[in-house]
Length: 136
Image (tube, rainbow, N blue to C red; front, side, top):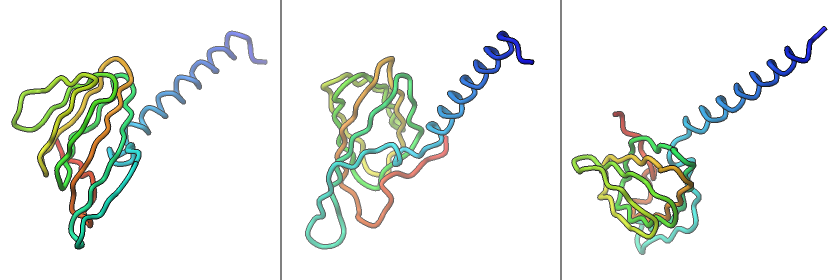
């Protein structure tokens, strides 16, 4: 027979295990999977597109090092982040700030202590993946 203490201990362990599994699964998503695509406009011809996306970040969330095949122009709608761009000192970005990242430049993002929302516009070649992970 299961005692109350045994039941509570088992339930607590199951809850913690489930939370850690969900966190690990979220961390293993690629940066592109976390993006919400808002709009896409193709330029005349068949080479470039303009893509508008939104990214919501949980407190303390880290977007791993990655790059894009074209220019990224972003606006931080809420929260605060630390942006690490290869070859440059870390940049602290606050709500209302904008930033740009050149094509094929490795970078990563670490969110602050509250939820943040980034709205980004990409000018990219049509047939290339929007996000490419870069080993550290």
